[in-house]
Each structure stands twice: as C-alpha cells, then as structure tokens.
Image (cartoon, rainbow, N blue to C red; front, side, top):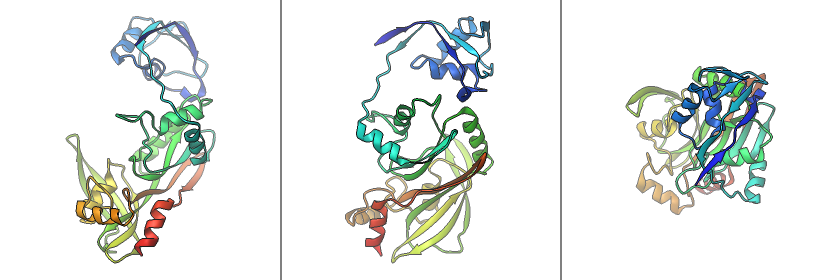
Length: 296
C-alpha cells in the first residue's frame, strides 16, 4: 500500500550530530528508493535551515531539516508481545547515555528477515523510543548467544567503529570444538574470502578445559571477519560442535542426541573505551552450562 506523507520540519538532535544529510534522510524517509531521496536533495526540495544543501552536508545539533511531501510504501510494524518487551529489558546488562550491552539469547535474530517478523534491533527501538537513534555496532548469528553492543548516538557509533577497525575493541567468545586442541596453537592467522574479497583473519585461542573428544576454548578475535571463529576453527580441523554450516554433520548429530540443540558458541565479554573503560561479561547460558555438566 502506498501512502502520501506531508511535508515536515525535523530538528536535528545530538544523536544525529555530524551525520550526512543523505544518510539522515534515508533513515527519516523509510521505504523510499535511494535514488528518489537524492532527487529530493538535488532539486532543492530538501532544505537545511531554509537553504539548499548537498547530500554530503554534515548536520549539526538544532539544524532544521525540511522534508518535502513524499510517497512511500506503508511500513508494516511487527507485533511484539509484552513478554518479549520485558525479556528484552531484562537482557540489557549495561547502559549509559551512549551505549548498551545486551545479553542476546540464542534463537533471537538481530535483524528481521525472511519469515522473521522482527529482530533484536526492532524491539530495542520500541522499548527505547525515547532515544534519537539505536544502532547495532556489530552482529551475532541467530543461534550465537552473548554480548552485543548497541549504540545510542552517532558519535558513539563512529567512535566504536574506529576502535573495531583499529583492533582496540576486545571481543571474547567461548566455544566447544571437536577434538583435543594443541595448546601450542595460541594465535592463528588465515585468509578468508567473501564476496570475492580476501582478508586476513587473526584469532587468539586459550584452552579452558579438555573433555574426552572435545575442547572448551576462549577465542579473542583480533579482526572481525564474517563467521571468523566458525571458519577459523573448521580450517584448523577443530570445527565448533553444533555448527551446521562449517561443522561435521555426523558429530553434530551425536551431540544433538545428547542435548545440544544449537551451535556451542557464546560471546562471553566485550571491552571498549568510551569516556571510560568498560569491561562487560555475559555468563554462559543455562543450556550450554547444562550440556557441559552432562558432557564431563
């Protein structure tokens, strides 16, 4: 369904201070083609403080942006239960004026998608509607649990993105891998290719415990590549147990019979510096803890 939206004037808040005009409009005018957004700017229909502006114009606090009338497809809002809202609020383990850290349970996707009405970001934007913006700093796979960072201002988003690029943001994971890990393997660097681009992936490994045919590891990812830990462990011939994409189907089937219903991968802690040093930990969830006790 197509809806007509009236012209409006929006005052830029501190949450969007320094944002490009085109990116600001893409968020404000949802479900509208990017090409149309640029046309509105190019033809002068979008004004900043009553003046024509370029897409690259950096907005400042208290700037007034005129958004002209536009047509867009109606956005279907997902139905989010009160129970989900309450669970989401309880899952916020750290929050200040700039950032949140959420303890994501397994089976919760961070984004909506095919056959998924909503994701974590949708719920957070609902329960934190007083915030000018809510952004995911990074992702976790749907079946991976643990610490995920959400920023509340554009400054925090950019600053922490810089820390990630410069390997200053520390993320640690716990995983159970097949086989007995060689303690000599403490740091490993491999080449990972995605979308025809190849990049170095560096991970540090620490043995936490040995079992009969598996090893519990702590992994510190120095670089942040797509599926880095899962791919890295598989390349080193120690696939993560329960990993249906890079793991061993036969081994996974055995562990599934023994009570492991998902990949054994948990984001255990994050450390970052934003005004102050923050070290946030997420305890291992009950399902994985229960499996480990049975596995001993």
